Length: 182
Image (cartoon, rainbow, N blue to C red; front, side, top):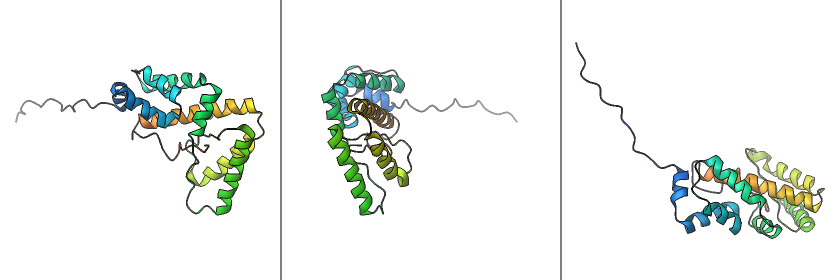
């Protein structure tokens, strides 16, 4: 018994990748999207204005480079746009008070919000990690902390942009949520 001719392989139509959509979107749309991720108009505009990006690594490198050029005022503006992370359910009010007190001490010492990239921190370890980081960073001198806060913002931006252009199209994720500053 002979078989008939085989059918050619079925090919899916080209589906644009999130980076393709980002590269071709209207300027004001991309700027608004980046502003939600980066919290700085200048930072967002620089990334939007240098499109298209050949790949996600190039975009992330550009975001890092642009962040290094933020003035102290622009950095403070980006930090002011950060918010406290959502804490796991069942956290006692004393834990919320401890976090609020630590954050207030930080802001009083440095004059800007606290930022931290939580990465893959399990939800039940978020509060401890934030409190530990605030307490540790309170020992920094103001210039050292400005550099640390800027690095945390870069890490947050990388996480948000990677998430945005990876799967869901949203700049906010539970693992990348900043703390007030964060």
